Image (cartoon, rainbow, N blue to C red):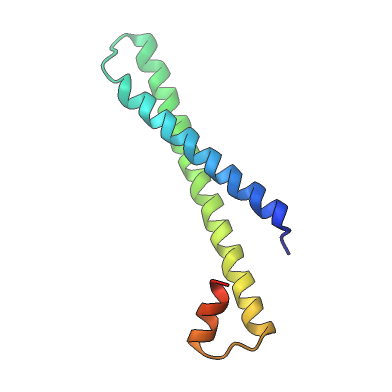
Length: 93
């Protein structure tokens, strides 16, 4: 089971990664008018790194969602939530 500090750290990591990705996307967008080979090579490397970061972020978010769903299922079983309403209320509690 996750501790609140670990969950908060993971949330912070995901938030930080989103911010880095947003900044990198903005940098790519704002430097597209530079045509020298040096800039174009750097932009190509950044684009590859950005693609990898987006894939990693998707994996983090999928794993976080799966953990949340598993925790909700476990709570539903523990508290014998039988109706959909009970399960939804437990998920948002």
